Length: 92
Image (cartoon, rainbow, N blue to C red; front, side, top):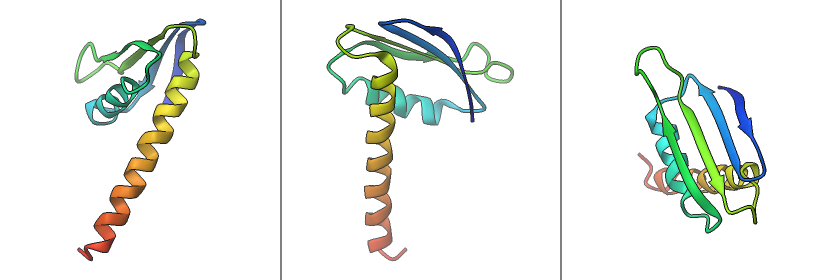
């Protein structure tokens, strides 16, 4: 996964996340909305076959968009670890 920063300011971050799909971006978008400092969290894929997704995050300036993104990734990672433990406990 390659990430290119397209815009980076105090309250707005716009990044292109190469070779990812709706699966990862939708989970990330939903997790970002759990942060009370988020004003906008969304992504766009202009063409499903050729375009790379662009994730846009805006905050209320009490938290940087980069910190909000890092925190959301940490929460998702922890949730995935917990789910994996539960699946392993089922011995599937």
